[in-house]
Image (cartoon, rainbow, N blue to C red; front, side, top):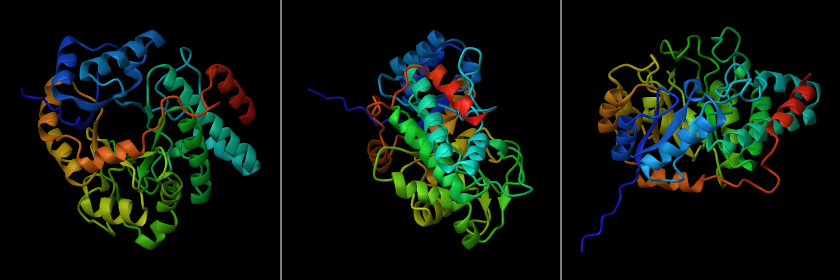
Length: 350
């Protein structure tokens, strides 16, 4: 008798264009078996619809634990919008409270992570592309702006760590971003390729510091993942952005920073990358990054990306297992009344 052994999932996370999946999309996911799905505002209509979309994807790939991601930071960068879902503050407001009262700021960051995590878990979402650990510098592009907790590396590390702890307690995996740091980018990587010419010692004491501290605090336990920036760090690699640079991945992210968790690229549709989508995907995975993120498109665009990708490597699978966050969270970590928690958070920040 022949025993069929299923391959590991494809090392890609895709995004669908609408509120529901078509028959063609379901068939593609069934055949390609990508690791996960990412959600945006275009996918978030009502609670029932959103839960159904998550269920449909997991049914298509045949994995009840398939990761479903969303990019939900708070402020202008949250995908599940009011009035259907609660509003959450931009991280900079929590940073402002921290500077007035450190303990209150850390408590607010933890509550923010727990409340967002609880909201996502209620809808079947298991991974959040948050928090930012970027440290903006004067004159940098506004794409980061109030999405950053602070412009001081130590404050960013503390607040991002508290946010992550709250989210993990609620049973959701955080993705810290944009490793090894987006704060010095003078252009938006959605539109152009940023180049950072700062020397490595300066970067180590500023941009890299929050990621290094978060890696040291969480590497042995559940979570987090990290999202790799489409930014050239010329002190390491003069030609390739971090997301497709084996030098940056090995020497900086795995080396200087010491991050041993799951790495996912920023979206390959962003204009910072060159070449076809298939070439971009192949370059991401060749760099040593575990997962390629492809947030847009439809079946015709997904097919060449899937063909250029590969199944998750044994090392990637081991990292996924080691960083898995229990779906039930921790005792007392899941918040039942998320709207009330969001109102409490707003009152603390008023």
